[in-house]
Image (cartoon, rainbow over all chains, first blue to last red; front, side, top):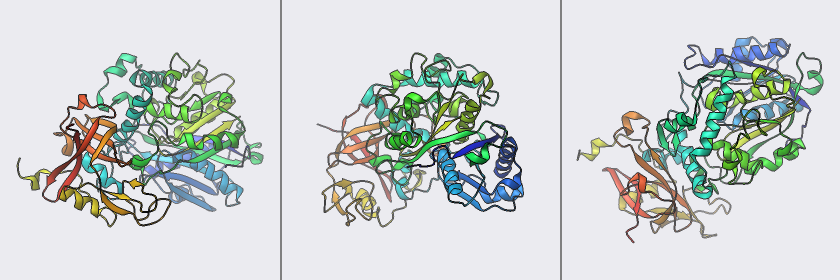
Length: 385
Length: 141
């Protein structure tokens, strides 16, 4: 279990423009976001001695970004081979590295040309090695096709479906309209949702997140050092990473996963809440990894906001809207803000807890949950101000 | 087109020491899965060590009978050049009688008529002289 409650804080955030075609190298995106985060923290590049990132062989290595920034004393540069599950793992890993004395002040980033370069959602390596032998030749290849299989099983078990997913998609779009960074700011009605193109049943186009070019970065340092920096520190209360039995070789290897009606969050929930010393009832606002609409239901259920199978009714009647009891994805989420592999959720969490979220601000927000991942393995954090 | 050798443009499985018996079985019209000699548990996909007991799994021919655990209907082809003339098609996760799940296309059934827990049986789908893919069809009974 994560045992560093409140010892480390996010002290700076930075991001590039989110676009469909950056026209730039991924490394330069990472460098821009990292430098902005360092400046936001009131620090200089020379103050950074650690860099952590995650990627799918589609990004710039931490060492390369440190080199472009001109950091001379980089002591800890690590790249995790991870999917969406990595977005909170790297921040927890940064805390661990500082605790171990491997670094003092660490930049965490995710950078990708996810639309103009390597498209995660558009396909995968077509070489049918490993478990892919049993999926790709059947035409079971893309992430939407993978998650649709899970969503169908939840429909079978609990009678959830498009009426619930439409609520999620339209709510997040409303939030994105309040967010100048968001890529999708045109209003979306429920009719728009239901009329959107069938991609892979049971998913329509608006069940599926965006593809984006861009980068996000944060700076993490000790709570003690954070006190001397310009922004209100956002403390990492707790966190967890992992999943349940039979996580498999990759996300298509959920063939033997116990039940497709719950994901990793059911298994890491106890550690997450215990590490932070709070429970779901204490969360003021949450940024849930919404690679697909359906994934939001599994996160809410798995983390105990409601029981398994009750996520559909739970999100209805305005509960997850900005003025609802549990505002979700206040920047628009991966569905409507951008898909920076979930790391953009961490930036929104920090802005909410600093009180800097402008039109999107949830009044009095003190505790924010962030999640990352949607299948057999994931990560989550509880942040506070 | 009847020339199977030239008609299959999809991903070709690369059998390895763990999976060759499965693919050989497909060519012979037999659905081969693994069983742990210690626990009697059946499993798919194959491994070299039985998870947990760490013994060597034995290969057995499965009944080929099962039920639909979950399914998708692919309508937007990816990659388009390979799957454009295949959509809509169904990929199913099937729970075999033996207790493990496996993957296959569903054939002989309109995509609109698929039902949860529908009884299915193995159908061998030769896509080229060298490759037979696993598929399922609704059970006759």
